[in-house]
Image (cartoon, rainbow, N blue to C red; front, side, top):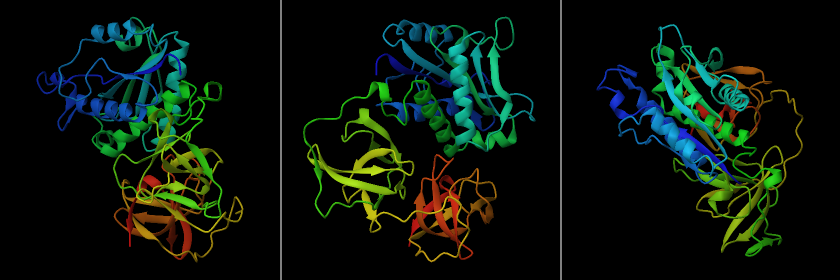
Length: 393
């Protein structure tokens, strides 16, 4: 990469609430939300490109003046000519107003494109969050929307209002840690797409050659070809996987939560004095992950037989490996007949706090958190990954 950077603005400092009784509502200081989102975005993008702040993101420092922030960002523009930025905020208004909105400077086509990419990922990752109007707003000179953080930066820069603190539905989202992490994930996906990257890996025109030494393929009969590899690591940060056969964080492509994995193992490699699996996801994309039994396990005996893209719901003969508790929903999670929330049919619902037996997990389609394969009323079903908390037997 050459010149890419993410400019990560947290919006406000700790002295904007409660000292001035502004920028917040009872139970939520806006800067608490802003800094939580900025911290998650920093965590997800660090190692992929420089992540730079001009307002500290620990939520403990006073507000840095807007002109100081933009002067700092503009001052490093020569070093990072492909830098882009977001200023994170929570909105306020009448109690009936709710939803997501992003502002870009009038006539700035690059910032508008960035804003549109952000909206696309909000709709995909946070479908429970509605748009505020169209979701896309022009920051225009001489109007209420003339925001400094849209007007002054030299690089593409947008101001995001994630949701309304003054709306009871949005308030519940803004104070929820899972929602804040989803906001960070939206930022990661949008930044990578705008910069021409994919899941943190290099774009085809910018491929960095993998290490040419200390990488050996194991081709013996012991190679676990075709088996599923699953993370057994329970750390909150997840288990890293990589775009190249290397443990260097600059090749980090993403993370796996406990119980998630890749459906196909291609081979086992000797890498930098350790072992890695070369794996493929459901789309056929190749990644690399540690082969240490401390962090992953293999499941299955070989490649699965081809399955019709539209299987009819059938009675399940699979053996349950554990169960999930339904979480992260208002009242119930939908159980689907296939792992694609946009084309599947509903089999029924599972109430919040209830349990379903699990036979495995799959990436599926149209869900960044994948899907749990469950046994529902004696049939095979699928539940969106984020709505299930895995518990082994």
